[in-house]
Amino acid sequence: MTRKKALVVRGGWEGHQPVEATKLFLPFLQSNGYTVRVEESTDVYADTDEMAATDLVVQCITMSEIAPEQLAGLSAAVVAGTGFTGWHGGIADSFRASSDYLHLVGGQFATHPGKEPCERRGEAEDNYLPHTINITESGRDHPVTAGIEDFELDTEQYWVLHDDLIDVLATTTHPARPWQPWHRPVRSPAVWTRQWGAGRIVVTTPGHSLDVLENPNVRTIVERGMLWATRTA
Image (cartoon, rainbow, N blue to C red; front, side, top):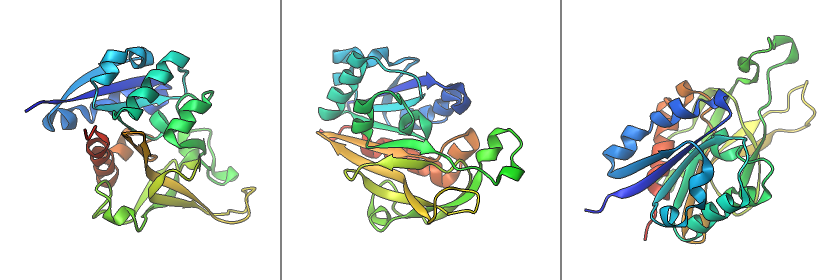
């Protein structure tokens, strides 16, 4: 049996613990028959032969920058069938200056609303809010989210700007609180897939910290997303 090849690319903002976060999933990939290569930069995306031989890219790079030839290599690989997945800022807040990357992924982090100003203490927890991840009707039948019920988290709640070419498997709703400038609740995609050429993309927005990634629902979605996004032909 031919082993599948996964490429884990990590780096960027250290607040999302890219090394520790990706280490959580390496045993899962290996136990499911993947040969795993780990890279600490996006240089590998410009390696045409390596990318053509890769069945799945797991990216965990928040913010940072990407060179045009690296992004072109990633995009070409996905179009040709390489799967692409990740969580939170590692995929939904990568390469903010690149509109072509946004076009590839289909959604971009805009903000994570915070607590009431009087409750803020200048710490990361200022942006932690209790919220619900709601599985959509299509999500209830999709291999990535089937069997998962709506669940609660107390962490960053991503507000995502997105296009209509994504298939939304789960959403989260930002209420209109008195101290916020918006005037009605806003529903945002929390988990989505995207078909791009022959490639599959899966984005999971929860995952700010290791405890969130270890939440059974979040971890199941991320791991199923890896399997589903992997090259199919």
